Length: 154
Image 1 (cartoon, rainbow, N blue to C red):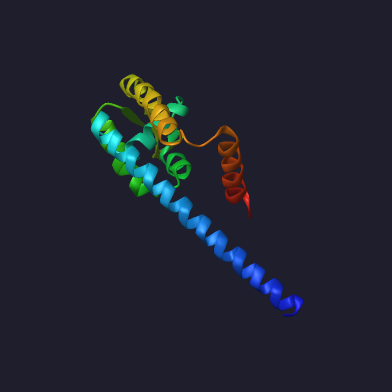
Image 2: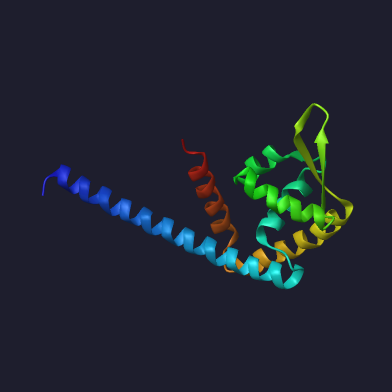
């Protein structure tokens, strides 16, 4: 076998290994998400999208424009609008028109939403810690580094 053929076989083997990595990452993510969805439903009668919107607004108490919120969550404006509408109805967020642009809305978490979110954030931290309890600190740090490398590669 010549060097070029050997290199192609090694490249193919690495490509297959990377595919296996991706599939395992996807399965792990789906596993954790399913557990979180169930715990949010059972513990708070809420959904993961509602939690995500509240978490984003909790981190930005000054509020966010709807377009910023959907960009932050990496979902369409339409998806965010439905979730925000239900959160407004439930008194967890408030929406106001911007004076500078009557077509744009600023969305802010309410005090009721902040109180709920503080409890959910504490629970969420515990749930994730429990689900990933078998992952040593060094592996967690390396995993974070790998995920950042993947996300920031252009």
